[in-house]
Image: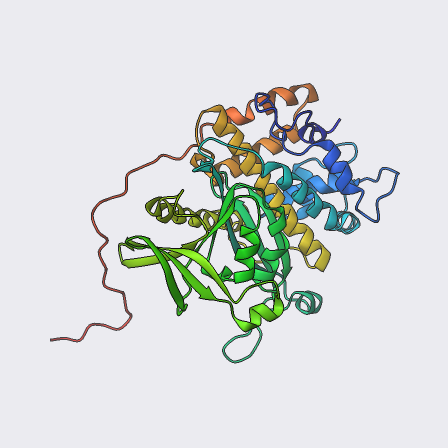
Length: 437
């Protein structure tokens, strides 16, 4: 039996005491449900069946610098676990990915995220609330007529289009575990706020989400706050007209703002005004103001100001995806519209699997999931997958899997105190010599 089947086996998703396998993450029944969405699925076993192609898509994200056929060879992906040039033609791999499509991979990402959003980790909560962050990122594709027509691109200052088509990602991330619990992907022309509104109803109760100022929208913020004990935190918009309704303390006030006529026309249920709590605090460069739905009777202003600094964690998550997993390769490798979506959903799913495995290792060592070095874990898992793919006999796979988290446990960050000396501004280098005095 191929080692991938062992990796995808899970009897009890939430049994944290059973730490014997890397892929105690994706149950086989979820994989089978996802593959039923593939319109081209057949009963007969192909040389590259759908379950193996799905594993190949995840492997593409881990081995970004390798060609797809080399990924298949490294992971020994084939019906009989004999991946070679004689059994797997490069064109056959491409056709197999097209048969699978993007929908099963997207479904599997959402299914896993739907379960993992309810998991709790050490230091996972802030005052009883789970902490999420929402932000967007851009990915670019190859410049082909098909991709440019579907995804579109930005305009330059000269009204010319940018060199590459782009697609937009909006993600909701657990800032303590860095797991992406939900996401939306679309062509570039669709904005971040409409994408964010589509998965607001999937957000669980008792949570707070940290947003960038680009998500300023009365409708979006009201949708978040409509849930059971759901809150938001966002920087103040420049030029915002506010009326102080109540003052709780210095730098802590209740303000009222008007809803624009355009927003009320698009969303008739919005009132003419809405209220929020405004917290202003000092920074090294001056003052910063944030607005929140958290009530002053339960949550301290100083703690709220400190909490918003964690919004940067989602930026670190995007960096891990683009830099650590993609090797700073900004352009996705696929050249067909559906395969571009398939590749990106596979990238997000692989990122989540690595993050969750790191979180499980952190629990085993009584550490926080954010203490794990993502790049080191990603490289370590890639090496172990290659070793297990070529392992013989297969009976030894279980033992190797049981050692995986122990190895990850040695990849914790070293917390060092930051230097107290201020940074010095160096003289910028120039190719022109300094004038003689």
